[in-house]
Image 1 (cartoon, chains in turn green, purple):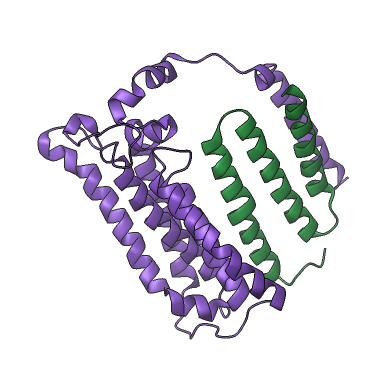
Image 2 (tube, rainbow over the protein chains, first blue to last red; image 1 turned 180 degrees about the vertical axis):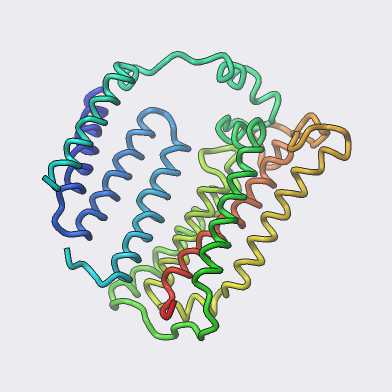
Length: 79
Length: 233
């Protein structure tokens, strides 16, 4: 179990770093969505399924949608 | 320089988190007296097994009520800023692959959202999560078939009425205990039947509040996302 937790921490860290360092906005948005899913898995490992559901739905669903809409409405992915 | 600043910020915040929380991140932490009270008496006092829902919709229901007021304000603000007397965008929609995949995905999401709202007092979930899933369904509909299709299915005016309906039910249930002299949003203490814990009709006002929040949140979020998505705004 500890191994899974450390692995998930590593994935979350990698996704967050990737989102900051990404050269394209779309890549950053997708990596933020990956970060949310990783956090949701962590919450469910920590026996907090309610928080996990909320994180997955808000973080990977609505926030990603809002970011994608904003990118599309402000002239596409031009870096 | 511009690249390294966010990196340094993340590293500093990460170190702060590790030092502040220490090994409680890996091994857990002690339970405080209030949480212990919820664990010991929660099921008897609220009639629901999901204690997270018990806290959200009974013990701290006032917070939930004000939260939905915040969502109401946000939806009202976006809608009044983006509203234009213009016909909705009729065409739109994405590739054939998206239009083929999404209709097969939507029934699952619909069932999941209703399940989250209806069984929030028995299993993880609740009206808020269910409502957000339902609003994602409306976004997927727009992605596949365009805003015009979604407009004909359920118009923004219907959504704002549905949100008012959900909010109205919340306020009525919140005020009802005052009639018998109990405090705002009292559940079992005001005489609402708690039922048998674990059954569908249990928990007094909790399932009703959950369904009202489901309708309200779904309407508000899909209204916000529709306003952002429609052309000409």
